[in-house]
Amino acid sequence: MPLMEISIVPVGTNTPSFSNMVKDVCSMVERSGLNYQITPTATVIEGDLERLMDVAQEIHRSSMQNGTNRVITQITIDDRRDQPISLESQVAKVNGDVH
Image 1 (spheres, rainbow, N blue to C red):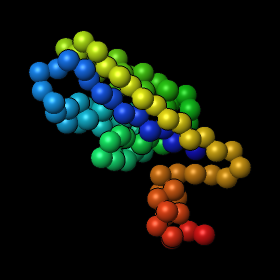
Image 2: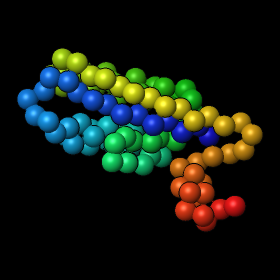
Image 3: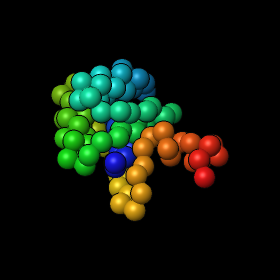
Image 4: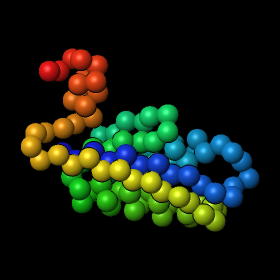
């Protein structure tokens, strides 16, 4: 199942903090029913490609509707066909829990 890392950077807001935006993103992903994991600099979401793109579009558009004049959205998609991947399996491999 593909993984998508998404990072939103609001530009021109009145504060350097955007934790409330991250909370809003988490709420949107939870409503979508997709599995996700927050990292210090991005959110990684697991799901089929169409649903990932739909939620990415929703996140980007929502960020623009909150009074932000400019948003930079970065997306990375890891879509592997030779073997299944998931949030848990990728972390387990790095931790040495899976060979």
